Amino acid sequence: DAKTTQPNSMESNEEEPVHLPCNHSTISGTDYIHWYRQLPSQGPEYVIHGLTSNVNNRMASLAIAEDRKSSTLILHRATLRDAAVYYCILRDVYGGSQGNLIFGKGTKLSVKP
Amino acid sequence: DAGVIQSPRHEVTEMGQEVTLRCKPISGHDYLFWYRQTMMRGLELLIYFNNNVPIDDSGMPEDRFSAKMPNASFSTLKIQPSEPRDSAVYFCASSLLDVMGTGDEAFFGQGTRLTVV
Image 1 (cartoon, rainbow over the protein chains, first blue to last red):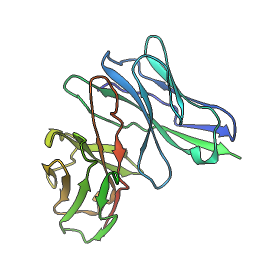
Image 2: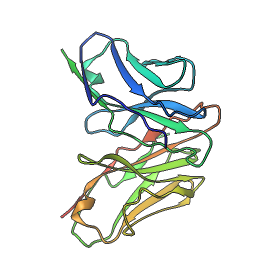
Image 3: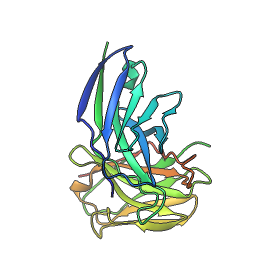
């Protein structure tokens, strides 16, 4: 399976933007880049996903490098409620691992008031 | 839709007993995932189904674990016999998947916290 690499932890100040990086140098052409987050004592929740183009939704933005070997999740104004573990995942549409959704260790984001 | 529903929310059982965890996916979703989460190992994918058929069960730790999906609206994860090292939070998730990549976010249940004593 294609793998991702994320920093173990990051810190941010409240009200400031946060850029969470993810490397996926072995990404295949049919891998979508997904981001999930897990708040304390809750199940993971979907944040955003994309294939090649940058994506925006009400929660965040996803910036994808032109060669697709890395991506960045952008929280435009961090709040205390954004403190969570953020997971970057590759999800294949085709192939033997079709539909698989494998979580790595993620990045633990701390937000300081 | 009420989302992915898991039961029970908490389960405490004695070593050697059979444990059955239940999951009701979101209606219309064709993928169902079972995960286990511990502090040591993080979030592990145990097995996933597509249209009620198990696709990959390589994450199932051993023969004591089994999972079934008898129909599109129900799945079970069974541990028999249970051991203390099985103590963890077990999550069920469901999603669609289409080649256009639209609408394929996975929705997770609240999890079942299993304690085996």
